Amino acid sequence: MFRERGLPVLDADAIGHELVEPGGAAVGRVIEAFGNGILTDGHINREKLGALVFRDAEARQKLNAIIHPEIRQEIARRCGELIQDGHEIILIDAALIAENGQLDEFMAGLIVVTCPEEIRVKRLVQHRGITEDEARRRIAAQTPPEKKIPLADWVIENSGTIEVLEAQVDRVSEELQGHGG
Image 1 (spheres, helix red, strand yellow):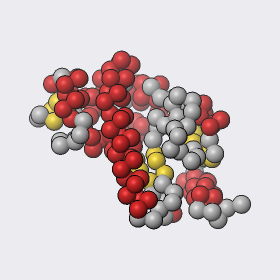
Image 2 (cartoon, rainbow, N blue to C red):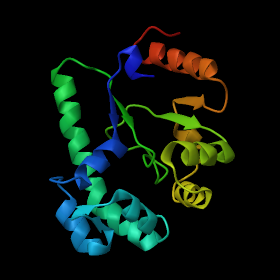
Image 3 (cartoon, one colour):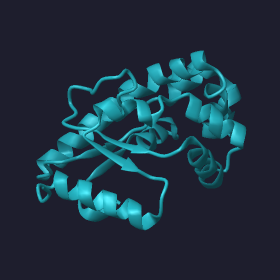
Image 4 (cartoon, rainbow, N blue to C red):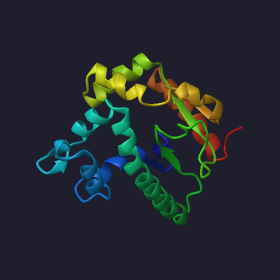
């Protein structure tokens, strides 16, 4: 929705996926760390890897130690390109941002999107095709969005209708682009 309003959005999850696709910068280290059991036809199977790391906190930490620095580096590179192209505001869509209870130094602000856990579980099952148990494990592996509210400059509540969500995105977009009150 923010893209539709002219704001560039970098998706940290999508960048993480790119890093483990064939030719990705993290492929060799991920295979070395987790072995051939995560492969299908010689390539990293993200479903196998995800099932492994969302069951095992130590495995998740190991993967994050490999992937997160690469994601940060790629986000920085892409931000640089967007700044050179004249963009002053860049949104980074990242579920794991501010996990340590503080904003990263590069962040000028934080938008937190909240939604009751039951709705989040239902959406993960519907949109990702995973089991309810797997959805709950993934949610449990993240800091609840509600705990990030004290750090937030904007809070978007995403349990209502699409129209209510659009209105909230409009308000935040206008403020970000200097047209708000």
